[in-house]
Amino acid sequence: MRELTYVARRTVEWREAPDPKVRGGGEAIVAPVAATPCDVDSAILAGHGFLDPPFALGHECVARVVEVGDDVTAVAPGDLVVVPWSVNCGTCDRCRAGLTAHCVAVPHMAMYGAPIGGTWGGLFSDLVRVPYADAMLVPLPAGLDPVAMASASDNWSLAWRLVAPHLEARPGARVLVVARGSIGLYVCDIARALGASDVLYVDPEPGHRALARAFGAATAASLEPLPQGYDIAVEATGRVDQLALAVKCLTPEGMCESAGNHFRPGELPLLDMYLNGVTLRVARDNVRAHIPDALALAASGNVAPEKVVSHVIDWEDLPTALPEKHLKPVFVRAGA
Image (cartoon, rainbow, N blue to C red; front, side):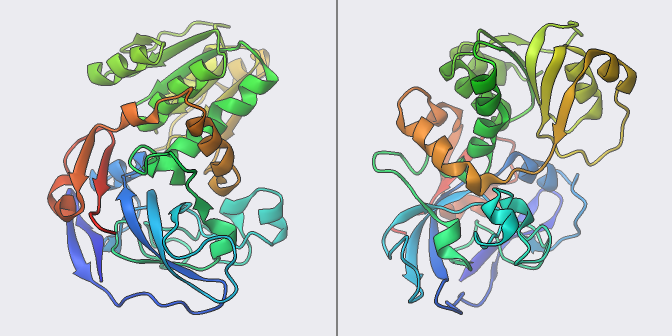
């Protein structure tokens, strides 16, 4: 089989690898049918990551089950499934607590798309081994388009988690979104659908702002501090200066979720945060726990994740098209 391999800045190529095999009764082999780059993949391709190439890329996809071990009961060959980005067993204490990104049955930070916590391959591959199939794989609900939901492995489900629980706790809250890619746009759509009274989306890219307005958000190219202006803030830029501005806009006891990958250091206004009473969460997402709820919202018809898909591109064009700057391209594999 082939796996798409990151080899240098803005450069990827197909490399041959052995076909993965089912190694135990609980495993499965899947073939991605619709895969998309996560926002962090864009940073890696731009040369801003912290891992040296080469390594297989990709950790967002809908796949078709090809083969399952004898003990797998949740999925069967032919099923369309969402493959979560982190590898997790589903049965350890952490997994049962919903902390699937911190599973103790695998090396720390085990994931697809980067050689962290072992080498698990990438979801821009012709075939992928899933070690804990019943725990990891989530059947795609009937009627949902694999292209629209290619990001359910990470960014779509992450966006749900960034805002949905907080809006449940604070109905009608005002939401600030400071972003540069798909995560923030998904948040705008979800926040509107779940009853946010006001959504402001901040992004210097005019095309992104236009899409946010289609989701019912007000927009701005840059953020000016608006003290006590928003109950919930979501930062997805990877820039500490933008995170600092976001927390300055919160109401007393406001909540800020940072989904940016902060590869560079910076300073936060800790005294201001202390005086105002701010809760800040900076974390990788325990996405497997949220995928079912995020898919249920998508199936409700109250959101439109397909609008964030900027391009639908043939699987064979991955080496040339992935390094190009697109908002959210989805690569589709015919016949898989």
